[in-house]
Length: 509
Image (cartoon, rainbow, N blue to C red):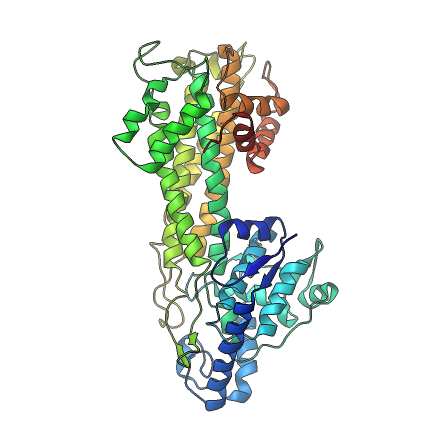
């Protein structure tokens, strides 16, 4: 398998996913190696000359006025890691840990951090050989970067902490030894170079925004199936309606829905049955479209961040300077991931309303709760309860983390981003949204069956068939959580989107 070339400047979201989930290996470009070496020379000169540079010849945070001698520099960097590794909560998933390491490598490869080539190669070996540090999810303020979780990433590099290797959680030293990766001793600037940055929040958020981009496609498919189950009015999707309000996401969504519903015998035109549909159908382009525009904005921010320098101090080798700044501050990502969580929440909000219209006989004209012999059978009654609980939970989770701050380091670090909390919340919201969409799709397919399948659209038919291969029509009550799980699996591996793209005879989305 071809390796991902790390230049510091060209990493894409798709490459991040390949390394995190497909275990694609990485290597440094020649230009990155040259920059790393030059940056390290500059740091060594600072130490030799006794120049006052934050975190190299001084302490950290409130201790920035404390001078550190050349002889103490190695102990300073080790102490930094062991005292900052104070994370809490459950560990991050392996894919997130791989993302953290990858993004840190890419950050260091830009040549503004002063880490040794040997140290960066150790991280590359860990990534390529599958040594995955155990990193607790909680404990980062998002400035000065993700200090606590990144310190847990570094611990195995110096023979401490814990790491997973080939499915087994070991001491950091044992995991490194079994993988054949020598542990290292950190030297001047390196501890700070490894933990001062936004790589944890960005790794979590990058994977979430990638999943969100696929989820908005699924949301369109779910809505199209609901259109058919409710004999929805497609006149509202006329491109002229959307061209006069030219938001890209809205225009695209209307076009996609028409493509999905092309040739369907289950849809209606204005006045055939009724004049208007409820907002949850009629306003799908406006709602889905707004979320798409928001998610694409976040994608742009993420792709800037994954190729940025978020260290402090920043080493400028050309002018032989180390400038202390604030690029570790996670505010650009914190706001973006709060925005992502809100945009995703709305996909579930409108999905749950479409689902409610399907199960409610006074709104759908279908049997109550989508099952014959109601009373004896409860059908999909409690599916809507579960969906309602998830969307209500999302409303709590969507409260922005970025509007909060709390001072730290004796008020030296008096404004922080909470960006990692924002990223983690967005991920949890995304998972809830995926579950709700699974429920809507399952209910829509049931509604189509009860309505009488007269012929589905070019895009919805393959989606319906994929569902019916693993979830049969409900004729009497059975454990529905298993059916929902099967539907959700088709969303997790993106099967629903793929079958629509491959079998509809045209490229959608």
